[in-house]
Length: 546
Image 1 (cartoon, helix red, strand yellow):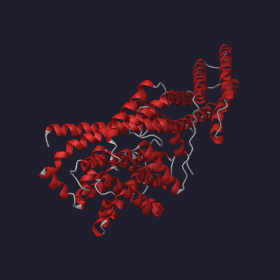
Image 2 (image 1 turned 90 degrees about the vertical axis):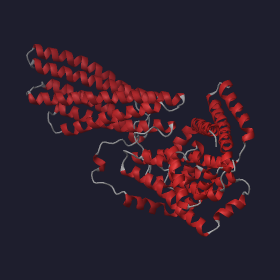
Image 3 (image 1 turned 180 degrees about the horizontal axis):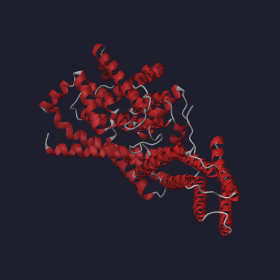
């Protein structure tokens, strides 16, 4: 094999991977919102779960992406572990579609597909048609890449060291290890199986040598979800363990089958003379059969991973995100849902601090200080993580609507963070009032009570929307924001009159003025959040699957 063959193979691999990316991106943009709604309404029905997992993976052409999403959902509480197990099984079935597409070997039509796809992208001024063009062109580029790899590998048929290596792979353990390591490195079972099929198309490998490598590739694909589970909670790690166990159990069963039953000969007899079809068929049979075999034992699989990874006593006390992770979003169409739910958590902490600090102003006490401080730590932590995740989302190809929505969510995060800061300011004024023995007049306390009630009214609009899953009462929030402005303007005048009469000290007057400023800002930020929620149809509440 010459250096030219090597470069041709690498170029083919590049085209193959880019074609997969184009197909995935186009399919995601065409069907993304529908897939998002399906995942949000997932039920505990095992058959439905498997079908949804298979369908979504067939569309986005990546079992790794589906599994990473599921890890994120379980980490957030959006999906239970007992639901995730069915999605994972389905994802393994759905990933076989790519292998079957490659096995069609429609290389003669690849140039036509590329031309048609590029024509739709360049000359049809319609975004949805453009996404369809990406799918078509991506498929054509994928086949061209496959042909490049296949042609480059033809000399390997007569290359003795390679032939000897392929003979070695007939050893189950070596073949499994090779397949697992290679797939773990490139983080795509579809791509690694495509390369295996390219070898087969070149005549450099037969099914008897490839089958154990193929089993190992199913195990290697778990590396992506393992990486995604780093820094997540225990249930998310258990989800990854289920994915790994699924493929390990399937591999053990099929290796045993190959050793004692002429399984490989049966597959060869189905499509004689077409090794790429044989590889695709083994991949499909492996995943479907393993799913059928483990389907009745999904709950037992959950119980097993719970014993392997027991919950730590202090695990739930650590600061952690629930809906987003430190890794890049698996799919852009899910990123906005993850963001909005994480922001909803952040908003809950901010709302609680508003309530606690306003109570503290009229009842000067340090009873709430620890709770307010803990909430602020969480607000700051979530602000940092949400900002980091939002930045990652902007690097993922998104449609215009999702880009606008991500921007709106980022603005809401900023407003919530500022509310948290103003609430902390109010808490500090409570401490200052107590430490310096400052006294407010009875009229000032009444004014603060009225402002507290007005802010409570705005917060109640968000709470009612959350409880009843209805749109925000914008009219009431606008009314409250305008009322706060009017009240504070009036209360400032009252405070000056009290100062002139000597009813309060200058120091108390300054603190009271700062308190009014922070309350006014909180009302402004609540209004800004509500406005963005209505404009972009954002719900700042969490829905947990039952």
